[in-house]
Image (cartoon, rainbow, N blue to C red; front, side, top):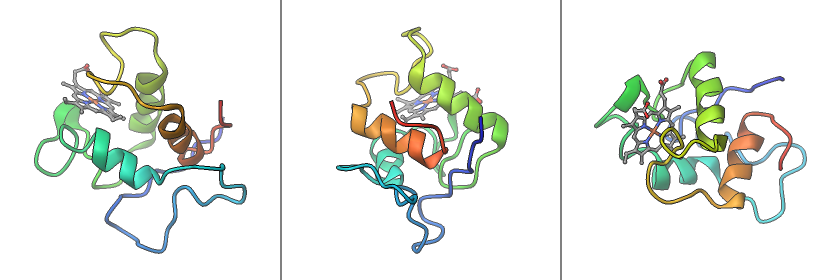
Length: 101
Ligand code: HEC
């Protein structure tokens, strides 16, 4: 599995994380998903689990993100409350170079 780095939301405005060669119809920007659903706990203010989506994250952390957003184990799934929509999940998959579900 090839995993592309998630670029920081605020870093490079020209880098469109949803804009791979084949942008998924109705896709949302991964930066917005991170901002809306993750950064309150994993951002510059608060780096729960040592994770800060406002800075580049390591390969290991990326693998961890993939596991945490897809696991069926509710005690590990992210975000802890509420669910990601299919569109939001696909934004992650696309940003990471994983085929959309
Ligand atoms: C309400 C706060 C909260 C939100 C929102 C949240 N998380 Fe978490 N996250 C946590 C807590 C607390 C932990 C550490 C406890 C644990 O491992 O479950 C954690 C751990 C993680 C880890 C494991 C870190 C590691 O390397 O061990 C990942 C990956 C992760 N979150 C991803 C996400 C993603 C992606 C989102 C947004 C879709 C998100 N989280 C939203 C609270 C949150």
